[in-house]
Image 1 (cartoon, one colour):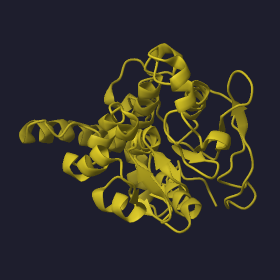
Image 2 (spheres, helix red, strand yellow):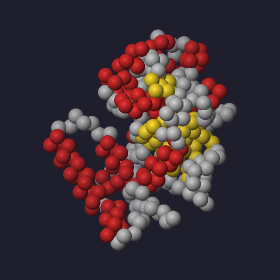
Image 3 (tube, helix red, strand yellow):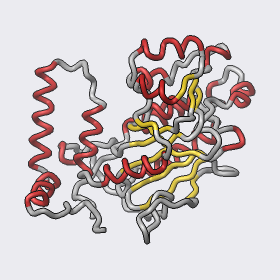
Image 4 (cartoon, one colour):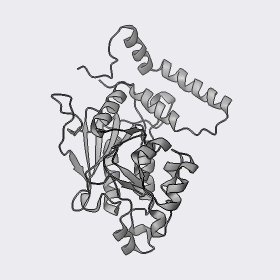
Length: 309
């Protein structure tokens, strides 16, 4: 069962006195992370979304988990105009109220090769004719970061340039030990401009100055050391599933509030931050979800938002 409570289109929990909350009931799809009969991971396509021609991004929803799969292996999931638009369509579905966690996955061999250079070359200097215009890639990264649901990148192959920007926009990043990374922009005469925004909010500038300025590759262990990724795992899918299950055990409103708290600016003065967090804490303790969580603990039973086994 899901806890009571709604979120607005801008991901504000109703318990925080947002005035624009609304509900949206839509059908659910069977997704790749759970088989309904066994609660184990399975494979299989979900509902496709997209516009013209082959869909380059798939989305499937099952038991509160939305799995978005970049599915353009022919060009290593490069960020073409269509792929970025299909990603937005997938996020439209994933941001609905029946979703508790969003997984950003991909087909082999690569997570994402960055910009589609053939498309960018053909576009010349016209940004409207590329995946960045008008700011569509920027908005996609912002949506991954600001969604009320935790976002998890499942990276089982190399990531380059803009692909690292997508990955870094997720809250949690799980990568295979063999995955490698490179900010290749300078080697083709451009800069990692847009993607620097999520990356520099994740790691210190000195940690990426070398990779930014040289374009040299670095491995999963180095990415973990500098904080670009959160987990290195031989079994990415199993680790992602475990993280999803952990999120599902938390209260939906509490998880959303915790994500928002993690992304708050650290520039707020210490005493002001304490005051803000005190208001948030009081609101959550007094909320129906908080009351249910505490009662369930004292009564030694699962809270209402945890599905029975």
